[in-house]
Amino acid sequence: MPALKKIGILLSGRGSNFEAIANSIKAGRLHSEIAIVISNRADAAGLESARQRGLHAQLIPSKGRVREEHDAEVIAALKQAQVDLVCLAGYMRLLSPDFIRAFPNRIVNIHPSLLPAFPGMDAQKQAIEYGVKVTGCTVHLVDEHLDHGPIILQKTVPVLNGDDVHTLSARILEQEHAAYSEAIGLLLSGEVEIQGRTIARKQVRAEGK
Ligand code: GRF
Image 1: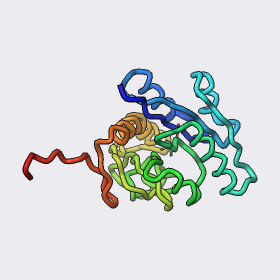
Image 2 (image 1 turned 180 degrees about the vertical axis):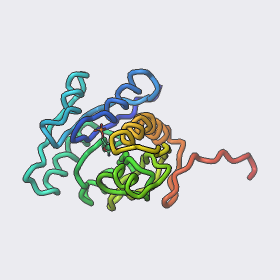
Image 3 (image 1 turned 90 degrees about the horizontal axis):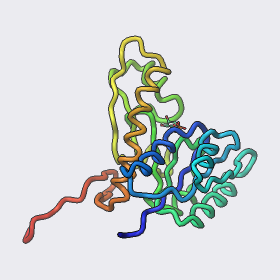
């Protein structure tokens, strides 16, 4: 059996996407291991949850710090943990260009809308205010622009009559929890290729073609 690929998780808050990933691994749906969970906030519930699960959980506070300095510390911790993939799971910090360069095509994020619609904060509120009938979530590679890198996968949910931010967010979150593990599995499988903005399963070419 090849060695399990290692994931590093960055979070700032509740951590339900982190928990969904950890649960997928525990249930054998995702063949990987969480090597480190890093929070930039001491009060992140996700950090406590990681500790309770016996994972390597580390606080690297960001408040009042220069972005590049904080990022350098986070990069060092991820490198020391020898992660193959960095997963942003509600990490409320923009990454510096140095960070992106340290893990080329190896940083993923989940966003609660069908990008490129509604990037940035309050994506669910943006969707309701715009009046769309369908929204969802996107798992994508992280590049230097906000919520912008190549898309790994998306899941859709309907916007129903009478939805508010709370009900819509809950419906999207359910899909996020499935989507994130699926996308990680796909990336770690080595069965996808990245061409420009397109990420697709490698085509099996018939012999002689
Ligand atoms: C999720 O909605 C995710 O899409 C966004 O931040 C939220 C994090 O939630 N990036 P949680 O901390 O994973 O519960």
